Amino acid sequence: MTVTAQQTRRPRPRPRTTGGALARRPLPGLVAAGLAAGLLLTGCGFQIHDRVCGSGHYPVKAVGNASGGDCVADGQEPPEGYVRYPAGQVPEYVDDEWDRHWSTVVVDAEGRVVRG
Image (tube, rainbow, N blue to C red; front, top):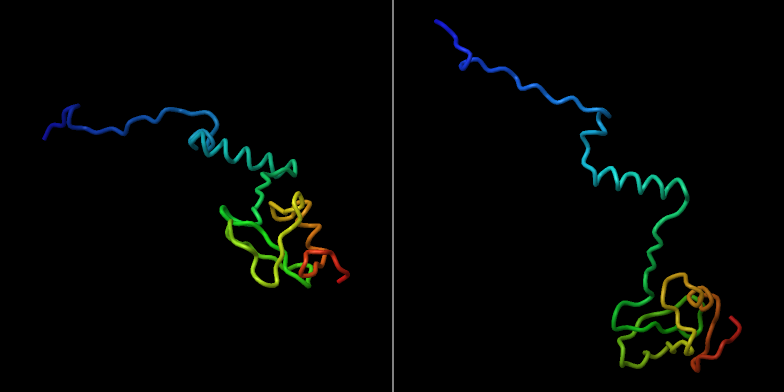
């Protein structure tokens, strides 16, 4: 039996790359890895701020304790045992200036600061 050139199969040569394993990784993965490493090394990160309340709600302060609070739907009054924050002093994000301030303050049923 005679074998012709058309009947033989040879493996296709692979193109040579420089860079080894990194050269075969997709570019977006490299970019993401580089950004993550850079942020970790510099101590910086994306600061994602959690809102105190979701859309369509506002925060209220619990009467009689420093750490209590809740969220009430816009257009509704706070339930019994809660008061609105004073205008201009409403916490918007977890751990913002007003969130930290109000977590150390006790208020009465009128919203006045009292000793806790």
